[in-house]
Figure 1 (spheres, rainbow, N blue to C red):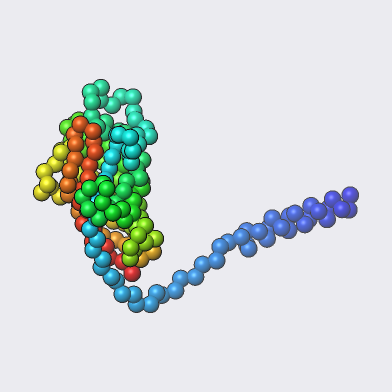
Figure 2: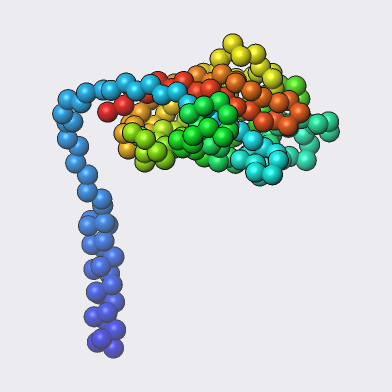
Length: 194
């Protein structure tokens, strides 16, 4: 009985003390001056949803979307692991990949719009091991836009050389197909980072 009583008091003591010592430690200090850098990048992004080696996969689609063909039906969720290259051809030297998700938003089957989350990671060159994150809406556009149509998307973070990045990416179609949904886009990126 005495052992049970000691055990009960020990448990009460531990439970009473735990909230006092269970709080996390934090300390805010003033950061020293940092020099913001600007980096500009240019590469090509290849989104290939069909064929023998696709880079984009449909992972979810609502049953109530359009009953007619659209390369990216409204409400469809895609995962992607798209190559980034130095040139406009998919066979050009690969410098990294863009991995993420996008949700198709256009109800018009002849147009494309989506919300993108992608991490653009570099696997070679000066920025090997670094990446930046894009989280933005791809504005409504035709599936086969003209070469002079530029779409802007927001950059919201980064790692490695692009730590704490912010900026924007300008996308311009270098080739695309309304029939398959394949697209190669020229990407001009402006990053502000530390």
